Image 1 (cartoon, rainbow, N blue to C red):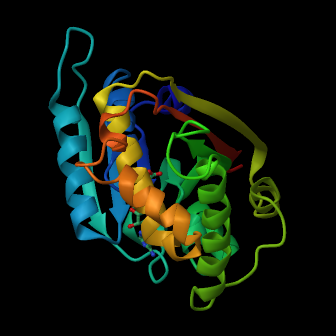
Image 2 (tube, rainbow, N blue to C red; image 1 turned 30 degrees about the vertical axis):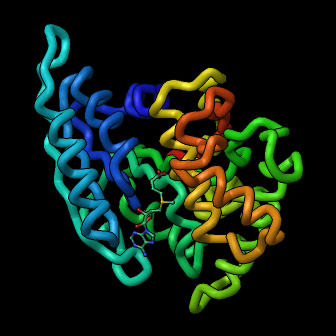
Length: 267
Ligand SMILES: C[S@@+](CC[C@H](N)C(=O)[O-])C[C@H]1O[C@@H](n2cnc3c(N)ncnc32)[C@H](O)[C@@H]1O
């Protein structure tokens, strides 16, 4: 839905950059959206080889998938690069769409990083920056074990981790203001934003349970030390496949996320 909305306004056979593509969820969506409207090129950029490989395989499989209505060619080009050291415009560009989801907040100077992304946008092209929204929820309020309200305490620990992560990033520069202001100050026009929901209510499909298990593991990895020991015990039970409370087998997990996308056009 988001990919289709973003590519809808692009000229024929556009160049699209997926910056900080991760494992390629959006890369696949971008390839499919371009396939449905005449083809183009998707350049995948990430600093982690394993993620870039996974994204490339997934995007290339989507690019070769053909139906009666989907016959256009989409080129997929992976580029291994550290965005803290390299300028996207030197890697690929000019692009009619630069998509950067949840990557800029990992870079030391976020404002400078946005300027770097804008450099790679062709005149008339778009920057789409997915940052912020609402924290994903996936746990019922009372899990039947531990203190109720674990989800909120996970979110509080994550917020503390985020602050710590920004402070500990070498060369970190404070941004002073929201993303729309950064885009407008950088000279983009038609600056706007939209938010979309990802909503998989309970009872879940197994893919949702698996997502919840991975998400909880991520919470533990980044901010487990900030949780109360009693919550850490609860989390261990939720992640233990031998425990009756195991998240991967529960019928009351769900997935509810709101993600925001900031948009601006280069004049
Ligand atoms: C939170 S993930 C987001 C992945 C994907 N865009 C998404 O929204 O699901 C951040 C991604 O940015 C990549 N990344 C972080 N710092 C980077 C850097 N300095 N240069 C290039 N990629 C980077 C990470 O490897 C990871 O794939």
